[in-house]
View 1 (tube, protein in one colour):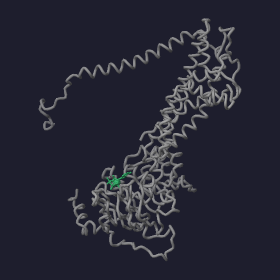
View 2 (cartoon, chains in turn yellow, brown; view 1 turned 60 degrees about the horizontal axis):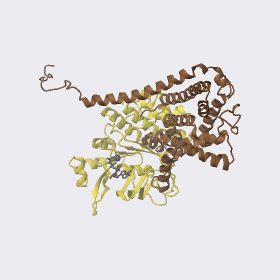
View 3 (cartoon, protein in one colour; view 1 turned 30 degrees about the horizontal axis):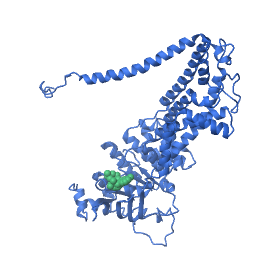
View 4 (cartoon, protein in one colour; view 1 turned 60 degrees about the vertical axis):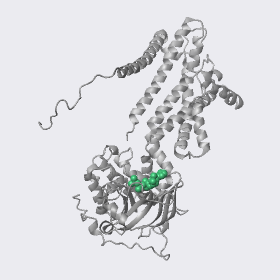
Length: 294
Length: 296
Ligand SMILES: Nc1ncnc2c1ncn2[C@@H]1O[C@H](COP(=O)(O)OP(=O)(O)OP(=O)(O)O)[C@@H](O)[C@H]1O
Ligand SMILES: [Mg+2]
């Protein structure tokens, strides 16, 4: 936290309004290249099915470049489901299917020519429970670059990733030790470092702090702020203070029961975090953030 | 401290005496364990005692002979057994492990044919070994004309242990937490990279243990070799996979059925050797398991 490289304001909300990015969808004259910036994701009419069950219905949202977008909402409303569409992790679940469109830098993420492996290399993910590989710290970080055929000095890549994840000082003397010997919070930062090591464009985080104590949580939050200068971050969280502290924009999801009595996840409101938490336009959002909801 | 003290009557931690059932259950467990261990110990003591006079270098230096039981050895049997095990390992382990990978990582369990395959592998594990002997005789020795050779024996035994290898490798692969696979795939690794670099290394202890136990079973088998013409008194060591051969269980069986007392001593000594090979393999399995055991 005393890192000189981290002149971050204590509150994420303070930044809002300064860093409103251009999130309008670009016209067709923009070259359709995957390196293009702003917005990173444009989601329109996204519905996700598990077999016949429509878990999430009709989501429209945009994820701005180098922003932190938080997704909040009650359990089972489809936050993880939507998040896992962004790097096509849902492809791995038998029977899971996405309808609608997700544009990633104006490229259809679910287009026929798109290779999910390449998608996941660019769009990294950190999971709820730290899941380091049962290998050394070094090998954990080097794994991503190695499987992606990255040439270059692996030692430097490892050090850089660990430094970015604010873990280098704590582990530099035991880099060859098994990663499972680290504490939970260190393991989670290791997983973040592991994601950074492949030089992704986006980092998705699914409740990355839910298994951590408050101090470790603060470290991860500081880290997210720091990382948002170079990366686009989407985070699912149950901790509303966390969403308020770290994110630029917040998406509030909830589960709605349709005419046939089936529950579907819906995006209720998507706005700047400061507005969601001070002046939400939907009653349900207000009820949820003030704790009057389920 | 006075604040924390509780009136004595409030907490009852004193032992009320364990119910009798609890004790009886414990005794029953210990007794079953004792029975198994006592019998094993008796067996080992008995064969070592019986075979002691012949447990010397002549046993593995000499070849079997009917005319001089007092100096006859079992060298061809030892070599035959080692050849069969080696070749079986080469054939059954890669096949079994690859099959297990397919079933665990690739097979779509909602497809009827994958479920049929799974069911049949469990069934195959229960097929008596003599049936495999008949299969080896009819198809491999006769129809494929591989004859009564090491190759025929090893293929037959490979088929015999394959289901066990597949089942134990699947168990080991399934024990690798899905979060490890997700973590790898989320970094842009392909499915094969994930299997090869994460799942397999993590399941090596389990796969190795299962494989060695499966091979141990093959070592002890006599029935299929009876069908496959593993001759008793082969007086030479196998020179390759197309040699005729003998194996220890067959030699033991034939020594025991002879009238002379020297042959039963020889049989006991051969059993000690067979047990030694088995124990050696099992200790390798234990060592591998402890050495590479992963914890999550
Ligand atoms: N693999 C799956 N197969 C079938 N249904 C699923 C699967 N994963 C999630 N679902 C269903 O989809 C809905 C949304 O689940 P999801 O995990 O996205 O919720 P969530 O908002 O992340 O909840 P939580 O806050 O508890 O993590 C739920 O009704 C859930 O039961
Ligand atoms: Mg979730």
